[in-house]
Image (cartoon, rainbow, N blue to C red; front, top):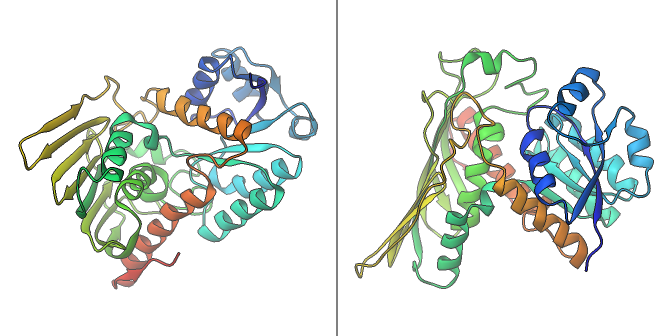
Length: 343
């Protein structure tokens, strides 16, 4: 049997809940030995919900040679330095999305982990939803046929109070708006199913719905490397928030992923469905109204990757693909011209 991994949580803010719940569910595989935040109030609030050893000294956490891996759940603009320090200390890293606030910093982060020989996984947990996993399986088996169309609709709601929190929706802390902070999950799932995009023509704006620095509405046409065409719509203006939608049109069938549900209709009359789970999914005012199941599956894959000395399913290179798509959407929105996505 594989030895139990000793891990540390770095960052105890809003996004920590599904990570902590997942670690409890995986207690036969992992032991949390440190839960770090530099803020006493955060540590105190965390301790009311979870019984993990608290830490207030990051140097001591990283110097603990018994720690196999760290889960970094801090604002995006802190990720590069934290990953560099963690991998230099010999730790594997599971990192909350996005990689960083810019693709340049993201590439440096991925390179640091690669050069240190440490495993790096990114929390893009939508890939572990059964609907997407089943659809990828059918596409790989040729059951859908050649994909000719692939589109995504991300119609979420965030009230102004969400953006009134210091740093939210800013370039300096978050690196972007609806695309990098919310839409990244669905866009990553989209290209994991349909393949990478080659070119986009987009509009990106900040609407009167929100007072914020970055974009809250994006609409785009997409051409994929395969030749397929599609559209992307992403917003946090759609009250009260709706399940994200991915539509795949193939030679043999049409598939729709709606939140956690899947419906496939074949031209020969066959149908297949996966029902949605019963949780809201974080589409509305509470972004953490989601199950921890898919976080748990991604963390379990990360632990197995360490044991097997293989890449995690969602590694740094995989995450860079969606970052480059987002860059292209924003560049096209800024210039008013189609933008080619460079690998």
